Image (cartoon, rainbow, N blue to C red):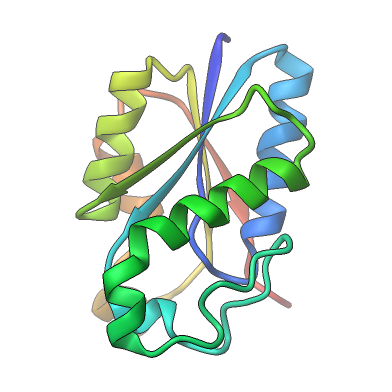
Length: 153
């Protein structure tokens, strides 16, 4: 395996996903690409999401300010994640769009051997209403997936 794509959101479990992906990359002597997909602004301005791996950029900004600087803040988040993982060779990518589609696109473009991502293990009505990025990627991907369960017990 040459390259591992680790898709990170701003959820509290991102550290678990990043660390698991780093351990897998180390075991396989693979390079890492960290990916964050910019999506709904309301998600980023929630006080529930931060600080994560030393990143606190979204805690004290209004939704309007965050919208104007979202990509820069996401880049900073990935740079701090890279520092947290203590690997200067990690490539970081920030994209916009539908999370599942962008993950698949970046995996293809970067020639990733495996995609690492988390799942919140939603079930029932919540899964139907919210959907599952991991499930969508799983259904469409030709690249192997390493899914990290992140649901708190």
